[in-house]
Length: 131
Image (cartoon, rainbow, N blue to C red; front, side):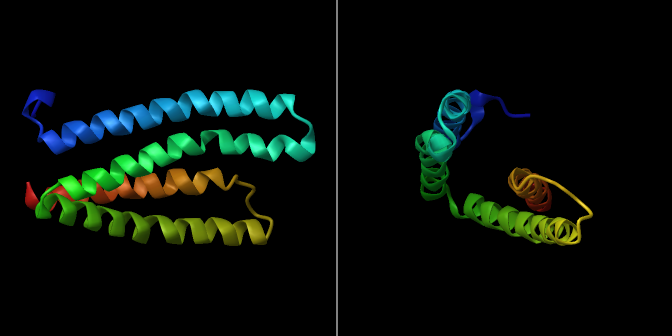
């Protein structure tokens, strides 16, 4: 297994940028929750906007990684996203139908987790084909 020192420079930069974004998200999420609890109900929803700068950092990290990588890495990324979408979307649809019929009561936040697990599965399957 390759260590950090053997990573492509673009991958190292991505991991640094993404880690900064995720650390910021964790800190800002705690701040948003504390602010939300302290505010009156009409203004409480605005506390959710506190995490947006971290989300922008994460999206920026992914976009820059896309631009800085070679064609194979881009192809793997697109294939993994496609597989993740193809796996996650039907699951989310079924959960939504269950909710419509009163059979499930899951938060919409689960959709993000389902799509990320699908993306992870897609990345594993896409890499397996080439390596």
